[in-house]
Length: 354
Ligand code: AOF
Ligand code: ZN
Image (cartoon, rainbow, N blue to C red; front, top):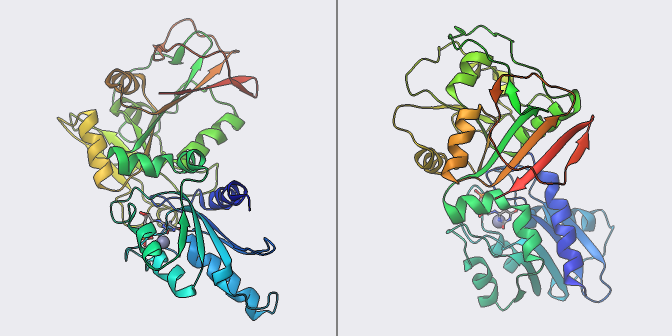
C-alpha cells in the first residue's frame, strides 16, 4: 500500500474545510480495506465545533453499509489514514482515538502529530496501548504546510502573520491625503490600485486568515469595513491600534450587521482595539490568547514598517500596478522584490516568505 498516496488524499479533502474550521486545523481521513485497497469511506473536518474528520469518515462508512453499498467489513483488516494525529481529549467533540478503538480498526497511518498540548503524542499512545498498529510522519512536510497557521499558534504561541499591500509602479501605496479624522464618514479618497480580480484575491486572504489588522490612520482616512465580501467563508476579526483614542465610535470597522456577524468567528470578539502601550509582541500574544491563529496586516505603511522592523512576520504579498505612476505620495515599505511573480490583470503579485 502506498501510504503517501492516501495521506495526499487526506490533505486534498481536508482543504474542503479551509474557510470554515479555523482556529481548528484542516483534517482529512480515508478508510481503506487492506486486502484490495478498496476505499471504503472518506471524511473531513467541515466546520469549527463540528465532528472531526475521523467521525465523518466512520459516519460515511456506516451510511454506505446501511444503503447496502458495501457489505460490512471487519475493520481489523482495514487502515485508517488521517492527516493529523487523532485527538484524545474531550473538547467540543469526544476523542477520536477512543472512537477508532471502539470501531476496532487494526491499523492507523498518521500524517503528523498534533501540537495541541491536549493531544501532543497522547492520541497515538492511546491507539498503541489498545493494540492498534500505528505509523506516523507520512508526508509530514505537506501536512505541516496545510496547517501552518494552526501550528504557528501552538508552537510559537502567536498567530501566523501575513503582510499585504498594493503599490504603484513608482513605489507608492497612496497619494498624500489630509490626516483629519473622518468622523465616521467614508472619505473614499484612497488611490485605487487593485483590479476587480486582485481585489477578490485580497478577500481570499481575508477568508484564509482569522483576523485583519490596519493602523489608526487607515481607519481614519479610508474608514474601511474590513469584511470578506468577494470570497467564500467568513469575515475576519477586525483589529486596530488606537494609541490616542481618536477613532470615532461610528467608524465602519465597528459596524455590526447581525446577518454578517453570524459568518464571523463564534465566541471571539469581532472587533479588537489596542490602546496605549500595546507593542507588536504584546498584540501577538494577546491575539494568541484569544485563540486567533492568523492575522493579515493590510496597512498602512507605518504599521507595516514597524512590523517589518520587528522581524516577526511569516509571509508578505505585494501587488505592483505597472500602469500606475503618481510621482509623489505615501511610500510603500521598502523591500527587495523577488524575480518571480504571478501576473493577474497585468498586475504583478509577489510572495515573500520569512
Ligand atoms: C482530530 N480530527 O478532524 C480535528 C482535530 O474542540 P474540538 O473537540 O473540536 O477539538 C479541537 C482540537 O482537536 C484542535 O485544537 C486539534 O488539536 C484537534 N483537531 N483532531 O482528531 C480532526 N480537527
Ligand atoms: Zn478528534
